[in-house]
Amino acid sequence: MAILCRPSVSVPEHVITMEETLDLARTLHADHPQLPLALRLIENTGVRKRHIIQPIEETLKHPGLKERNDLYEAEAKARVPDVVRGALDDAGLRPADIDVIIYVSCTGFMMPSLTAWLINEMGFSSDTRQMPIAQLGCAAGGAAVNRAHDFCTAYPEANALIVACEFCSLCYQPTDLGVGSLLSNGLFGDGIAAAVVRGRGGTGITLERNGSYLIPKTEDWIAYDVRPTGFHFMLDKRVPTTMEPLAPALQELAALHGWDASDLDFYIIHAGGPRILDDLSKFLRVPPDAFRFSRATLTEYGNIASAVVLDALRRLFDEGGARDTARGLLAGFGPGITAEMSLGRWIRSDASSGLVEARA
Image (cartoon, rainbow, N blue to C red; front, side, top):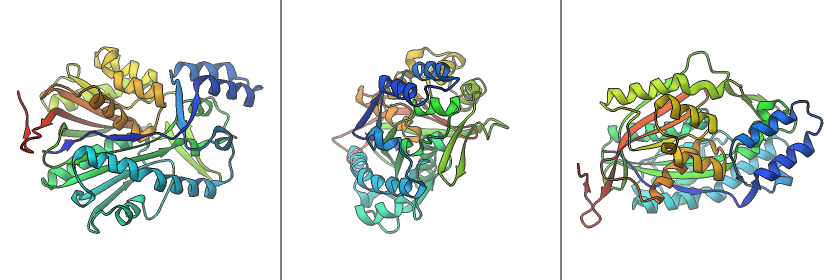
């Protein structure tokens, strides 16, 4: 029985507020013919502040792809270990107890993956499996949970470590002036999250079923255009409409499990933007407050890509969790357009005996 334990989350120390973002847009793009539209869209995100790995003055520079990728590697190595230690502590495990590390990121590139460095530097066993995922974007947080579930189903005594490291600020492109790019400049933030999926024991979500769904013929709606200057984020204006076709996929997955997706106890949803959450609330027929954890992540951190679902889950834990056997849904959305979805129940470990108990 795979159990998703409490995530550990960290955001960088540099902060940019909504007001500062709007002022920057007015200064940098004073002559942009669609500036009023871009400002309105940024305001409508509801993002009060975001955290970034460099001061904004440095973030706005573009020293080159190599320099940015070097910074990605250096910052990942400096920041990820503490988050990993937090996740292991929350799960009551040591590095030697981990059988696979699933590392997800779409904002920098390393080969070998950071997984190899973590194994060497943090005391993981040399036979720890490595599963880096680089091209699922924001959906990768949900995908990581699903692949950890699959692994622990195949190896019931195994434990999986998930790490999501996203430095979206390193993808800022000063020459990209489309409205979608300007909106992205005010929406995305930086963050790191990690969580353990235990094969046995622990408190959190018992993962029971997962699934994926891709909306046909939408692969160019969220994409990278890879140029000598790096990753240029492409965001189609139709992306906010995708919850109408994705809601039935969530409903179908729940129905296969004998559940009603409109009548669950908790929802951990990727916060791509307020329209995404509002539309999913409408099409799933659940109250807007059902997505309060995702909305809090969006408001306080912005869209931190694959780390969003782990941070939203961390907020559920910090609220005290759910009642035993409460039923829930976790979903990440990203390029494809792809949904990575999972269902599970809340469960608490018996601290005195180390056994897991679920009270109906």
